[in-house]
Image 1 (cartoon, one colour):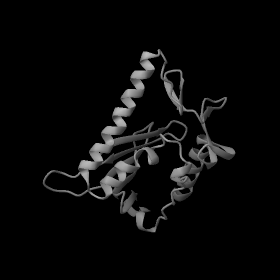
Image 2 (tube, rainbow, N blue to C red):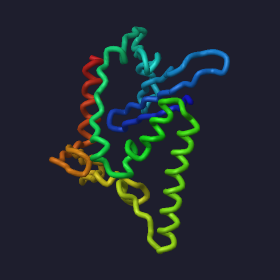
Image 3 (cartoon, rainbow, N blue to C red):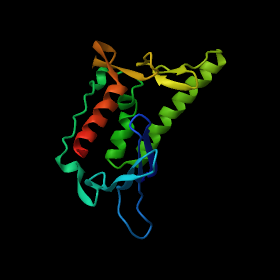
Length: 199
């Protein structure tokens, strides 16, 4: 299955907007994983740069008629997953809960994969019925309602209304320490880096 859709990223502070289209392969022609996009000045609509290429291969950025490599997947190191051992995971953590389904898919046993998937879904329906019978309201463990939205339970808002993520280091539910990452700082870093490249 291939997913594709347009994405818009805008920043009033920098007066910039990026419109990126994750393209899907045509029925008769084309190829997978292509993107196309433009970076524009919000106030004037002026096109500052154009994006093209494949997000699984090489993406290019074109400014003032000159094209250069924007991202090369082959030269980008892949971060290793940091995952707790299965025996240290809670029973309903995805990797543990769906392990039998995953193993069946990897071994191409779709009949077994469907059977194991049905077991999980039936168990979840059973638990939901028990909650309903006992009059227990379901509450999300990892997300909390804040106004009209749900935020991760490890997220906080600062005095400016920006979201902070409390990044927890450790194994499963045994956390060593917690740190705050400001999305504002990340955005500022990305903008500063992009500005330096333009100069």
